[in-house]
Length: 296
Image 1 (tube, helix red, strand yellow):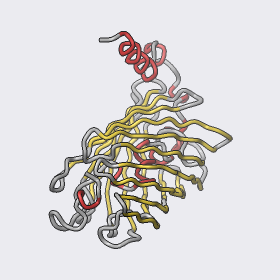
Image 2 (cartoon, rainbow, N blue to C red; image 1 turned 90 degrees about the vertical axis):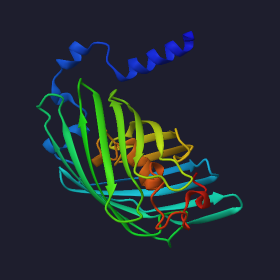
Image 3 (cartoon, rainbow, N blue to C red; image 1 turned 60 degrees about the horizontal axis):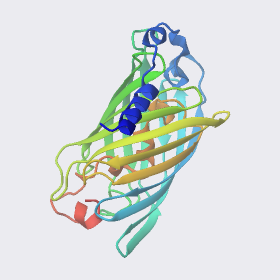
Image 4 (spheres, one colour; image 1 turned 135 degrees about the vertical axis):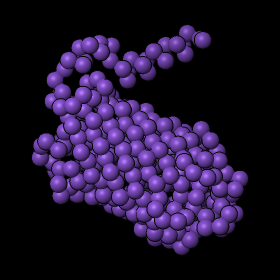
């Protein structure tokens, strides 16, 4: 292995794993990231933010989107959100612009900060309100519903391992997906690295999406945070790349309840196709096939 590759690997390990594990394990668990102790303190009932980004597929389709995340917490363990947006997509000489599908989500959380590894469990029920007709490149063309679950643990202080999975409960609403990511709270910044896998049956001529993602969130002024995220497709079924910038009061910490998930921010901006590209056609090879949409 070349020396510069060895140094790069050691740098990543040093960032995401503390050098003094024994000391970290003995630290007061009450000093955990604020996003993991929302159930034990007062929270802001309303929060929001703006995400702008771009996405490109191997099939030639490119998309730019701007979304507004509106979030309300009636209880410290319950979050309700909506993310209306506007997008523009191009494929060859064709282009289209308009309102994107609107994700609506409710997320419930239960955490045990005093238990070993401080586990936090999440359950979600979400819906997507379609703003276009079937086959529109800016959405899936129909209203859909999805259920999801997730877990986050902290094996040592300031290191968080998280995973979630989602499954559509309506037909022709895409495949299921599973996301995994690791985050480290550095005080002034919270970097994350993740992996996403599409679960189900690929469309004709398509492959199931697999991608890696990375991002960093940091406070800029008071409760306002800035998050920079991106992903790279490992298969032709995933976007070649995505890039997004998020700014607002809903992007602090690591919890999905606070917009802290790198994949959650990407899905708010680009919809479910950011991590799952198959399963939207009512018939095999139909009008929404990946080749006709330029997504494979």
